[in-house]
Image 1: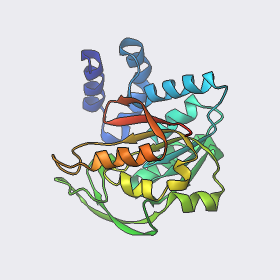
Image 2: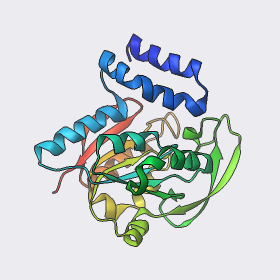
Image 3: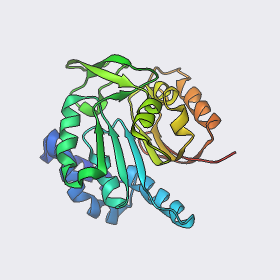
Length: 240
């Protein structure tokens, strides 16, 4: 990360509270991209858009697993005007913030206040002061309580909602990637592009969980396109 990139983050974090910091960054982002180039989800969208263009395709269906307060969803909907997003977020504060932020997009967003998992059940979400870091399984060094959430399998929701082929899926679930994958075997086989956060040391310094996750995705036909900042793996499914 370059000097200007760091300065951008510091400025936004220092002069705005948590609830408005993402709005501030969104306002500043065009300048940042002009100065230092795109990164993260914005670079991923550019890569996917170019690849789709080569194939004569357009973005129609996006599944956002762990949508937080809707900041990335906002970017998808602006970038891909023909897209519809299935938005999954179990944490009440983030879910309500997302509904407010994305209200302007109307029926282009379908909201589900549930967490995706390997089975239908209830879970206890460990709440973090930064809502984006709340987690089902990680023991937080800093936590502010728990919230009971509903868990479902993506494959079951997709059948219920008649979701067909998925152009792009993002999975950011703070340590339960394998459980989400286990409950989405059918729909992952119908997904073209996947952006998934895989933090190698999330479950301990010597954990090999990330290798298992990558192996499972490989078995489903996903091949690496690039690794972005924040341990985000951008992958494309290749028909065998």
